[in-house]
Length: 280
Image (tube, rainbow, N blue to C red; front, side, top):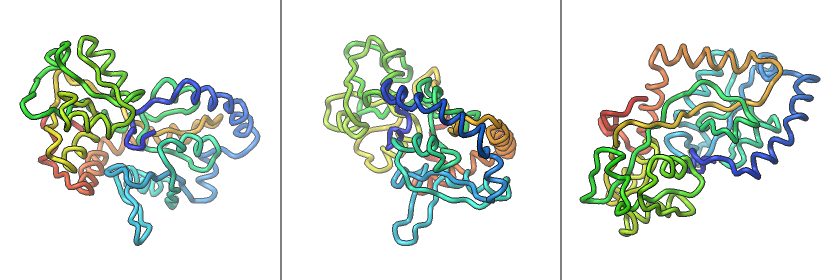
């Protein structure tokens, strides 16, 4: 998903269920029109939008207009393909099925987990989403090693890449594994945990919404989770090739950085609020 678990991996059962439709998807691609050909013919690029997941996606309730840095990327990609952008409302949990069922052409903001790679193809990384902690008052470690101690209580949301990262990098800490990101954050606020692990795009939003939760810290050495765009398997590789070329070109112009920074303003985050060690 990314319901705010933009970094959560698919369950083994979910991956298996989606993997079972791959042969059918390939058969349809071989017999029918490719994604690239359809976009060029219809002049429409279809993406998904997840309301309330700023700065990734934001939908104005009054006007129905979509904004957010994933939407900004979609608009530029559509323009590059001489097409118009269409946004379909979805959730992080159903976006993968939307791709498989040919409801959308591309989904921005996905982490390329091995389970997802069984059923989707991914672009080059859009950004590297740095792992950070939101630390309680009085707890200010500078390194991951300082956190990797039995007396340090680290909150994570079960099954997410935060959880996977903590179990791999912090095997000696006391892990406080909870069902949702909100519960993990609340554990810090209520004193059940010393910190919660979140990628930077989430931790900045968490603290901006509730400064009393704690402080965003970036422990060293830096560690990050790539965030990519997901696309259907397609016998015609022109679409994923075009997306990768477009991303490389956009990064060269620093457009990706601009889209991210501009849309952080949706949640009141200014460029000076981004920790100096973090690069987009």
